Image (cartoon, rainbow, N blue to C red; front, side, top):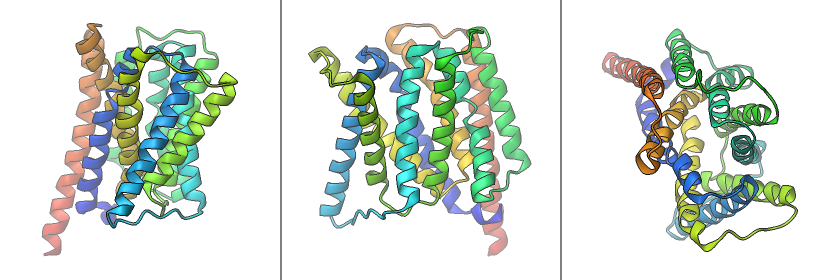
Length: 295
């Protein structure tokens, strides 16, 4: 993939991994909020939309014009991220967290398939190896926690994984402002949750601080990073990097809520992080060799 082996890859990796690091606090904040899935999805969507509209307005006022192109990629980007957000929260409520996160770990596979079908993206051996090693790591983490009864929660997790992968594909072709497309995703998330709830429920006062941190800061910034990343990286690389959120999330829950993830999580997490770091180092080395050869 010679066209990707330049500074774009390094910038893209930094942006995506920064967003993933921030989003890894999502699970701990959801635990702190303690709201039902529908109420959480509703207010999270509202806060994401509000944060992105505010960010777009401030950037526009500062001279960085924020454009909305009425394009299929922009609508698709927002729709896919919105669907993934709702499906993920409802999946967590409907089945074990292990089942949800294990199915979400298939995102690199779906991203590779969708990228190949719609973007004609080639998949080289190091990437295939990184996907396989990452899946092994996720299996180590969740093998002892998986429940055998598959149902609605598992289907919702699969919908979230495929939707997130589709969002990466749309992002790679988007020309509109990432703030505005993320705002669309937040609005669709809130509207969907309101329909499922058949109304609006206001959270208790004690839930607002972690809810605002999660919905107004963590998720908006993280989603913008994941929206920008596919314009600089192959979509399946973005999906591999996102697995770091699944690994780091239980670590923050362990630190803040004293829930020991166990040795399997630490070993499997090390395998996944090792695969991500190795893939990054491989492409950064190739990038440097190509720049030296071009001089």
